[in-house]
Amino acid sequence: YTLKFNSLCIEKKENCSHIGSFFVGPRKKFMDQLRQKTIVSSWNEWDPLKHVIVGKADGACIPAPEPALDAKVPEDSDMRGQFGPRPKEMVDKANELLDQFASQLEGRGIRVDRPTPMEFNQKTSTPDWQAETMFGCMPPRDVLLTVGKEILEATMSYRCRWFEYLCYRPLLQKYYDEDSEMRHEAAPKPRLTDHDYRQDYLSDKIGVQKRLEWTANKFFVTTEEEVLFDAADVLRFGKDLVVQHGFTTNLKGIDWLARHFPGHRVHTVNFPGDPYPIHIDATFTPIKPGLIMNNPQRRLPEEQREMFDKNGWEIIDSAQPAHNSPPPLCYSSVWLSMNVLVLDTKTVCVEKSEVYQAEQLDKLGMEVVEVDLRDAYAFGGGLHCCTADVYREGTCEDYFPIQ
Ligand code: DAV
Image 1 (cartoon, helix red, strand yellow):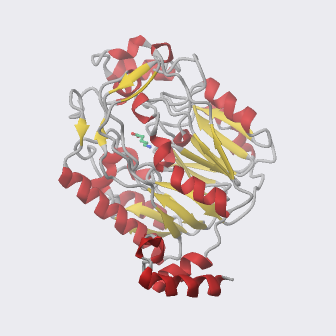
Image 2 (cartoon, helix red, strand yellow):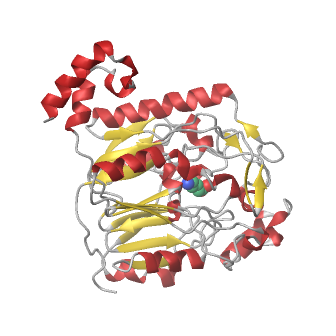
């Protein structure tokens, strides 16, 4: 069938240019596409990666002030007080690096798909609010959560990111068509009214000391008004999901995930020491079964270690970042150093300038693949952030039988 279909298309290609760009590419690539069977499945952060989405920087904006975002942008950040499209040279550079990363993965036999950027420099609104700009689609990890054969669109918790899922819909629809067992789900869209955010966080003069106190007491910017979560607050360990309670995910969000995945055990964690707790992936990084790197400034509290200790998992301090400050216009911290992408239990992608992190993983016996990505950090994060799993080999295992 494939060959027949293929020869028909090749034949048609000459006189049917309107048939679309899908058929116009080089013949080999086209045949490869036909041969690849799409499988959606990923149960953890370390099984052999076979198919992944890598984000794009096109048209990304610095979002306009809004309650949840203001709480996250560091008080001394160069981004405070400005919004709108990011400088073109920075977009081009970030895209060059993301394209290069995609090619590196493809060179290792991993299938890579890219999202469809939209006009992010436009106002969006719902009956409840209006946002001046959108954000971008560099970090698919924030939006898409793959658990087994399901890809779930997170609620998100910033107004500027409410419509971001649209950038991934062309891919999700394709996967849905191509894998008859794929489950495409979307969490309930939140209203994101002012009731969702603590007014206390509206000031830009809170100070780090006060923030550390608040976050240690789990007094975060988001309230418990409604279900809220970002996908990047979730780590997958087979039968167990570990979810960070912080600025972008509230307890209702975690409860919703537990009800939504009844076959899983869902664990709530938080990491005192982080004045801006969003997303778990620069804080707690599983490398392979039994081994997790933890940010030494944001250690998992003793009382939350039990399930790891009991089951013989080791939690080690990650190496120090190589930089003292994030790159310009970046809303993430220097700890993107530990935002690595594990390709399999022996291979890990580390940002090229993060020499201490690379050295640590090398000493742990991993093959380190260097990836130049620092100039894309500002667009939404590091190597883990800018990817989302479609397919990793492997099955749903119980790594924590003693609960
Ligand atoms: O440390 O700023 C960044 C995570 C982005 N997904 C941090 C967390």
